[in-house]
Every structure is written in C-alpha cells, then in structure tokens.
Amino acid sequence: MDRGLGTTLCPELVEGGYGPFLTTFLNRPYVVLFLVTFLVLALLHLGILRTLIWLVWGYAIAFLSEYASIHNGFPYGLYHYIPESFAGELVLAGVPVWDSISYPFIAYASYATAWFLIEPHFGKFKMDPHVSPSRPLPVVGLAAILMMLADVVIDPTATMGEKWFLGKVHYYPDGGIYFGVPLSNFAGWLLVAFVILAGWQILEKSLLARFRLPVWPARRFPFQGLLGPLFYFGILGFMLAVQLAIGAHFLLAASFAITLCTALLVIKKSLINLSIRK
Image (tube, rainbow, N blue to C red; front, side):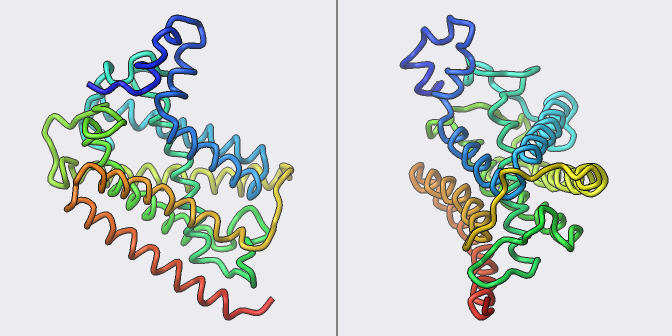
C-alpha cells in the first residue's frame, strides 16, 4: 500500500522528535500548498488574527466531526481510517491532522466564492472593504452548499486513494451509492460546513468586531475579489486532474459538471463586474 513519498524516501524522519511534522509535510505536499495559499489569501483579506482564529475554529469543528463519525457514524456516516496508510504522520485521536486541516481552507475558498457571487463588487474586481459581508446569511448558506459540492468532487476521489499518491487512507464499511461514498457523507458535510461558517460569522459579529480586533496586515487591491473563486477552482481542478489520471471517467464527468455550473455563475458575475465602472 502506498504510504507516501516521505515515508518511503526518508524513513529516518520518523525516528526523531520532529518526525511526524516533517513526514506529514513530505507525504502531503498538496495539502501544505493549499494551506499556505489559504493563509496568504486570508491574511490579505481578514488579517492575521482573524486568519488564525478561522484556522483553529475550522480545524476544531472538523476534528470533532471526524472523531464522532469514525466512532458513531454521525455526521458523515460510519467510516474507518487505515492507520498504516499514514504511519509516521501527525495523528490526533485516530484522525490524520492533515485531513482535518483541509476543512478550514476549503471553507474559506467556499466563503470567498459565495461572497463574490452575492455581495456587490466594484470595478476591477476589488474585494469588499469590510471583513464581514453585508448579507451574511445568504453568503453563509451559499458557502455551505459550495463546500458540500466541493466534497462531492473530493471524497469519491479520496476513497479511490489506492489508485494515486494519497493512498488508501479510509473506507466505508457499507460502501456508498455515489462512487463508493454514502449520501450521508454529503449531508454531513453540508451540516459541518454550515457550523464552521455560521460559527465564524457569529464570532466575527458578536466578538471580534465588538472588540475591534485589528485587521493588520489586510490589504485591498484590484482583482482581489477573484482570488477566492480561483482558489476554489484550484482545489477542484486538482481533483479533476487526479480523476483523469486514474481513469475515473464517469466520476470525472460528474465532477466536471459540478465545477462547470459553479464556474458559469462566477463568469456571469464577472461579466457584471466588467460592466460596472469604477
């Protein structure tokens, strides 16, 4: 079973005290890349303190949801991890850290895309000058749907992990109707996405804004509003490339349709933006 390049090429890393950190870094470079992208975009959008709070909050909810699901089947349906697939990597209570850490950046990409689609934007695709949308409920609702749709693309691909460099990290004992994934998984993602995003919005409105938490070093610049959607499609594009590489053609067709529908919405909003003069 594929256990990743880091474990194969650098077994000595597991020996030292920092082995799990370096092994995870080497085994999961794609997760690290997406995480760093999130940190840069969110830092420019929300500032460093809000970015760190988003990361901790999103990770905490993700970990709790995964821990609950592998033990009692809620909210995603029952599934099990295969520890041999991530031996030597960072693991918390049976849950790979790199798995839970993906939730915050997928949530942010979905949130920024929903914000772009719903909130008014000015010429040159400038981002809203505020760190919280003026219509938070529609943004949170759409972002939760976008995050769930992202998982419709991601999770079946991850379930086929033995066919690519992810490795077979988990399985559903009862299988699933959608390319091996149960529909309960997507319902769970919708719920967890809403909890992460709505919880963040409540934190922002009731606590962070009230105490005037600084937004340094947030910046606003032309075309910044497009970066969130591009990040979202970057994540989906990576999964589409994997599906193509492993020959999952039916899954690829379904995933492409989902991606295309969302892309058309972004293109439509972009055309509207182009018609708005600064």
